[in-house]
Image (cartoon, rainbow, N blue to C red):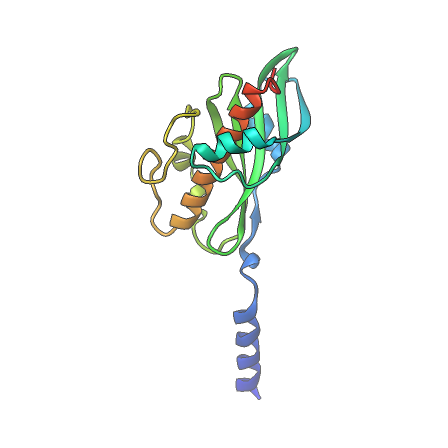
Length: 182
């Protein structure tokens, strides 16, 4: 009887979804306040990329992923400080939620991991790894193994988040060029 119960418990544990490791660290709102601490207000804007903008992003070697984006604009008075965009990418098996802050000058102000659902690779939350992105702008490689270091044991998470950051930089640059920001 005891062996049967132990076997049953182990079987259920083995079938438990890997989402059991999920940790929510912060919301997009909290990330915006962290990256744009001097802001006195934030505005949400939904934005649809047009065909030309999608093609411009794809020409950079970035998969656009979506035509619909939500921009969280940060202001101090009437001055636009920048924009925060939250997104998700697939880690190894589960989604990783993250947010990228881009200043009005087009440079990255920060990267925050909002939620991490994988059982391994949570090291991408380390300050040292995320700091590699600060100051990058359109035209920077933003490529794992080139200007962004990998973390052993978190290669897929590092790779996919890095690709996602590059995508957001390209999307924000298209928003800037279209006059959407400012």
